[in-house]
Amino acid sequence: MIRAAAVLLWIHAFGLGGPCIPAIRNALSGGPIPYFLGFPAYGNGPFERHGIHSTAPLLAGFLGVCVLEGIAGWLLWNGEKSGAFLALALLPFGAVYWWGFALPIPPVLAIVRTILIGLAWNRLA
Image (cartoon, rainbow, N blue to C red):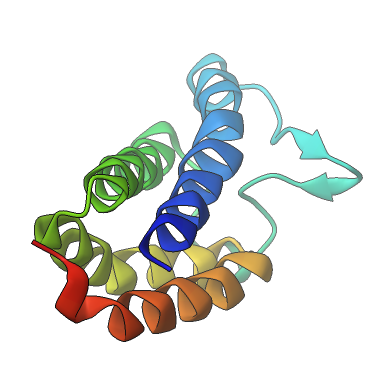
């Protein structure tokens, strides 16, 4: 269960953090929001509707959360309770970005990984 939670964290880290890098590059060069599979990557969501545009610092903050999720996954893979604490601590930060960028899949994966962590909590060192 813990390794499955680690994989879900890596899916977030690489699946969301990876595309964030070209989005930051576009934001720095004044380019448009990139599209992925026909959907805007990190734009046109509630952030934009509330006047918060996808800027390089906003995207860099999200990339930071993704990197930390990757670290949490690595720690969990090794059975360390610190990875569970980090994964749980990152939930509210990630949730703000998921909402703001209108990302529908990450909350579902976060719920599953949190349940998996909870079920295996006593097996962590």
